[in-house]
Every structure is written in C-alpha cells, then in structure tokens.
Amino acid sequence: MIENKIGVISCSGEECLGGTISRLAVRKMMEELKPGMVSTLCLPLFIAGDGGEREFAEKYPTIAVDGCSKCCAKRAIEKYSNAVAGSVDVAEIIGEAKALEKPLSTRNLTDEHMEYVKQAADKTSQIFDEIVAKSV
Amino acid sequence: MSKIKVIPCSGIGKVFGLLARESVLMVTQEKCPNDTETLCLAHVVTGDDEVVGKIKGETCITMDGCAKCCAKKSVEETGGIVVKSHKVPDFMKAHRGEEHGTGTYLTEDGWKYAEELAEILVEDVKEIKKGEN
Ligand code: SF4
Ligand code: SF4
Image (cartoon, rainbow over all chains, first blue to last red; front, side):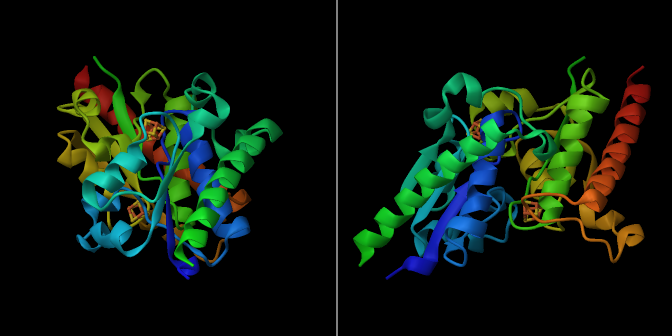
C-alpha cells in the first residue's frame, strides 16, 4: 500500500479562476477528503528549493491539479521531477471560459465556486483511489 | 508603459502563502488595477516562451510566504527585474499572538494583515511610478 504517500500538487494560478479552484481542491484533499494521506509541495520550489524537491514525483506517485489547459503544474512536475501519475484540468470540469475568468479572492467565493472546488477535489480523490487500488 | 507585475508565491502549505496571494489580489484587482497585474507563478516556473516574453526585462514586485523566496527566485530566473521583494513573515512582529487562518482561509486578523501587506505593495507601486515620471 502506498496510501499515505501520494503527492498532490496544484498550480494555484494567480491569473484566473481555475487557479483559485485548483488550489482549494488540493486544500480540500488535504483537510477533508484524504487527511494525512496527501503529500504536497509548493510548486515553485522546483526552481527555488535546494534541489531535493526534484525527487518529489520520484518518491511519490503525484497528481497534478491545474486550473486551465496550459497544465503548468503537470508540465513543471514532468520537467523538473518525473512523470505524473494522474492529472486534473479544472477547465475540463467547469469549462475553459469559466476557468479563465478573473481570479477570485477567497472572500468572494460563492456557493457556485465551492461546488467547482468540490467537483475538482472529487475528481482528484477518484484518481487518488485508482492509484492506491493499482498499488495493492 | 507596461503594467508592474506583482507576483505572490501562493505557497500551499501554510497561511503565509495565502496571505501573500490575497494581498497581491487586493493590489492588482482593487487598489492599483491600472498600474499593476499579476502572472501565474506556476506558468513562470514552466519557463514557456509565452510567459518569458511577458516577464523578461519587466519591472516586478514579489511577495513570498517564507525565506525560500520562491516568487523572487522564479521571476529572476525567468528574466523579470525584481525591484522590490518582500516576505510575509518579515512584517509579523506587530502581529505576534494573532491567529491568521490556514492555507485555505483567513481569519479577521488574517484579512487585516493581508490588507497591511497590500498597502506595503501599494507604496512600492507609488514609488516605482514616481521614478518613471
Ligand atoms: S494551469 Fe492555467 S491557471 Fe494554472 S498556473 Fe498555468 S496558466 Fe495559470
Ligand atoms: S516562498 Fe515559501 S511558502 Fe512561498 S511557495 Fe516558496 S516554500 Fe512555499
């Protein structure tokens, strides 16, 4: 079992709504859906860290959670570390136009946005379970 | 003149990353929308030509959540000119003992702190604009 060693990394994009959703979906994984079973990493540490971070996706099967179809988290993980074990593109869930709306402060989130977070987190959780099932 | 790029690290693990993110969104969306904009830091990290084109040689301000200074280093690595850089913990002294929230949400004290950080960024923007004129 690799249950407590699955990496989940969000892009946390600052330019659009999808980035806000990706970030909150990963926080939901950490706090509600898979507490204690998720390892995460600040994505920019791939450049700014001491280099040890680059082993992250080698050590943990890692799921990238991205805010739009540019899939920056997925591509950065694969550029600096290793192939991802799974990925979520928020734009595929809520639609590209919605994902590219302007980013939201957490104080302006509505029930509709929280539903998007739930859907993105549920999709991430489903991939998490598939990875665990494959490892048994 | 292109807009000043104000870029937070948006660190995921602790409240400091969220404070950096929220303070920058206050500046780019509410306080100085005509003079500033932000960029996705994760896009900067990819090193895509598209984002390098947007940032190379441009005036940037960074707000980081810890001493690892991910925003500052990633922006510099991509050719952005970081004229001001800050770290959220550097301004903690006056806020000792307060609860600011988590990486998911800010408390009332957290929002006050984010507002204070935003004002520091606004002062930077004013200073940079004054130098341009
Ligand atoms: S995937 Fe999209 S939202 Fe996320 S960092 Fe990249 S451009 Fe920004
Ligand atoms: S500066 Fe610190 S909090 Fe911000 S992304 Fe880097 S490691 Fe995370």
